[in-house]
Image (cartoon, rainbow, N blue to C red; front, top):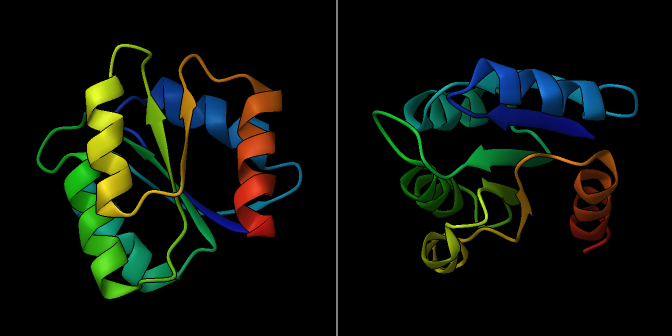
Length: 118
């Protein structure tokens, strides 16, 4: 699968890349929602891992834009446990699932496989 990773933390992007790159192709990395939307348009990834809280444009706004452009877009939100209210907004914006930080390889791959299976 082609994957786009979006997180304002380089450490979190690195962690997700390490988990995913063995079995998937990382087509891009973005550090804010603006970059995520641009990269989505350019790369048309199969799935996007999207942080919720980011500067310039947050993950909810970016997800909303991406799913408006492509109703079939698959977005997985990356969230801290205390962001439950924002998760509801993310689902409304079109996110299909979520993973919590700190990322655990097993839960990341389970979520990815679940969404890929449709």
